[in-house]
Image 1 (cartoon, rainbow, N blue to C red):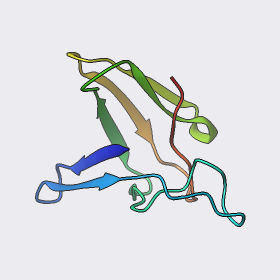
Image 2: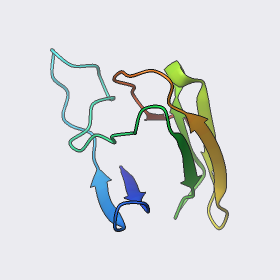
Image 3: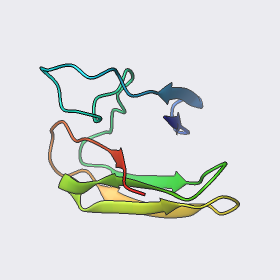
Image 4: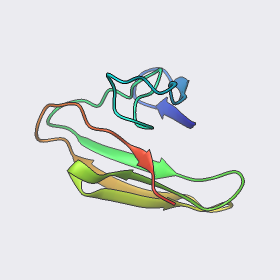
Length: 91
């Protein structure tokens, strides 16, 4: 479960839950609401957790950031190529 917010677009917020396993999809990676990121733009992620330490990762982009309760961690990336990238909890 991940919760997303687009601050630049009228505070659009939504939740994303993992879908049940399907033989035609990657196991434990596909979600019901995908995060859409703008191409050729700098993107800032603010990451935190409400319960325990988690870690948000997008391995194909070289992104990994810890989500720690009571702390906001920040990373910035430049989306310089289009594609479908899978984010996952790696903690």
